[in-house]
Structure formats: structure tokens, C-alpha cells
Length: 181
Image 1 (cartoon, helix red, strand yellow):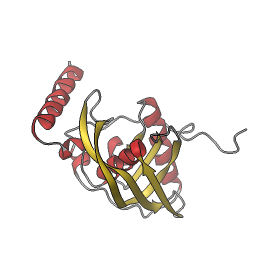
Image 2: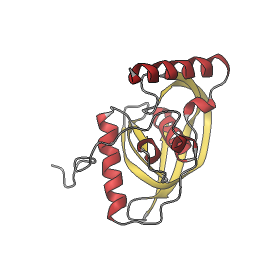
Image 3: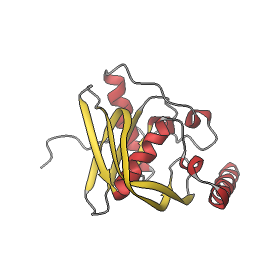
């Protein structure tokens, strides 16, 4: 029996910000107001992430330039990690570098092999301002690094080079043209 609400169950699904929008390429502002509006934002982010069938979502992906992200992501051992981090800082990223498939809700349908460290540690606070430290390995470490990039104004395609970058950006451009029709 659950003694707390399901994340996102009281939230509203918001429109996704897509690649090319300046908010995705600008570092987000630190959160200073830990009131009800932050809790509503986090609930909306969970609802939006689940509706888009994602495993992580940063606030700028719904057009809000605040340093917040949510996640519901498994690691490589299929252990579920669920939570949110306000004012996140990637404090450690180490271990083996792994090139693995990576996608983004702001680039629907586009995926590319992206190098990430196999271990990541993120520190920040929760919606009440209480300090949190989250450590992840494998796929969850990839998620943490991906979302920390978002709040810094970086999209995973910015990490790509050569033909991987060209192919991913072409696919994103084709997808946006198809949506516009």
C-alpha cells in the first residue's frame, strides 16, 4: 500500500520544447522559491515525462528555464530510480566511458550513440530545499548526465561529432518538417 501520491498524478501534461528553441541552449536559472509553484512544476514535469514515455525530463524541456529535473529510470540491473533534483550539480562522472544509444524527448524519434561515463553523482536539493545526493551507474548514470546537460543548456547532439552529429541533426530536421505538415 502506498502512503504517498504517485508522482505526476496531480500534474498537467505540458507541451514539449523541441530542438532549436533557445531555452534548450541557454543555462537555466537557479531555483530560489521553494513554494507551491515549484511543487506544481515538478508534478507537471512528471506528468509530461510519463505521457511522453520518457525516463527523465528537465524543466527547460517544457519551456521553463529553471534548474530542475525529474527522473524515473532503471539502472543496468533493472533497479528503478525515481525522484527529482532542484539546482542539480554533476559532482562526479567517472568510470568506463560507454558509447550507447541516447535519445531525448525534445528530439522525438531521434537516437544516436553518445559517449557517457558509466558512473555519475549529482547533488542538489529537493522541492523543500533539503539536500540530496543521487548516485547512478549504467543507464541511470547516462540519464543523470543527460539531464544535468539540459539544465546547463546542452542537448546530447551537442556532444556528437562527425557523421553521428550530422545524421542526428538531419533526422531531427526531417522529423520537425513532418510534424509541421
